[in-house]
Image (cartoon, rainbow, N blue to C red; front, side, top):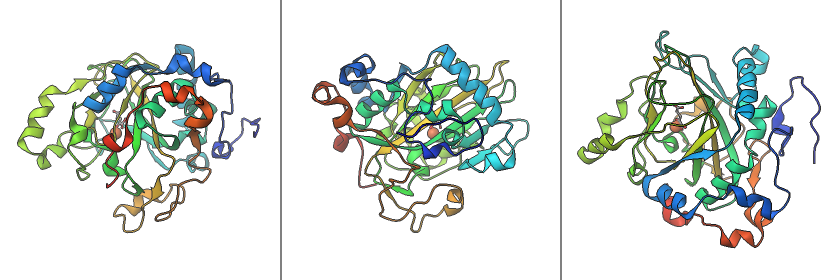
Amino acid sequence: MKKFNSESLIDLAAYSNPVSSIFEQPQCAKDWEEYILTEEQITSFKKDGFVSGIKIMSEEQVDKLNNELLRLQSLNEEEKGLFYHYESNESENPDKVLFHAIGAWRITPGFHDLFWSPAYRMAAYQLLGQSFRLFHDQLFCKPARHGGVVAWHQDYSYWTFTKPMHHLTCWIGLDDANEENGCLYFVPGSHKWGLLPITGLAGDMNAVKEILDKDQLISFENKVANVLPKGYASFHHPLTMHGSYENSSARPRRAVVLNAMNYKTLGNTEGYNRIDALKSFPDMHQDTLLDSRYFPLLFDGDKELGFLGREIPRVDADELYDRSL
Ligand SMILES: O=C(O)CCC(=O)C(=O)O
Ligand SMILES: [Fe+2]
């Protein structure tokens, strides 16, 4: 196991294990038990396309990450070079700010190690129904009073440069999030709508509605506000429709998102029509396993859980993830 011992600029992608002691690690299969999601939680994920209210971090751990976040928002150009994407304001309107960055896990120990937090790894294993790798992370931060929207979208519409579709998103609050400061919303059941095209992430909140049918439009009346205390998470399916409104409150709304994928996921970059968006991403090749150091294996079910693995509830991946996409 490699050891990490420097504060200076190094690419933490060199470490496919935790580099700090921020998240205590299970030592044996039994240590995973306290993190296991219930049968009811798995059932509601299958039905709605999301499950929420899962504790990932303590307040102290959130404070550590928020300190690192301050540093990440004032990096020099060289340090920004490790990000796959970095936009201080992704919205086109200077009065509505959405900080969006991909790749923090390569830069600071807390964001790196968050991928190895046991509560995250156990839940992700159960909801993917399979051993999995790190795909990438995302920071979505809306400042107090002038925070912009994240338009309604499905995550996999942005990820078709990888295949087959067997991915999972975990949204973790770095502030308490509610309707006032621009929490996330989900449309229950929308993970059964099939794959829709990209209609934009940070501009018009409702752009996707132009391409939806009448029944889909009606489903928005059932949208659910993902109200969560900081340190808590929701998980959603790669086709679940979600988005978040402006933050005009006096509090910021910061969040970190962890994206994982089946450990057998392949590159699908040939003919990908947004190839420019990938220029700072790690190398990926058509029909080739994404198994470089940038896509470390986060959880090997057989190795970590042994016999316990047979007892824990998890989704049937063939049923829930359309691998023909
Ligand atoms: O934080 C937000 O408002 C958007 C998050 C998002 O799109 C996601 O978790 O996939
Ligand atoms: Fe998303």
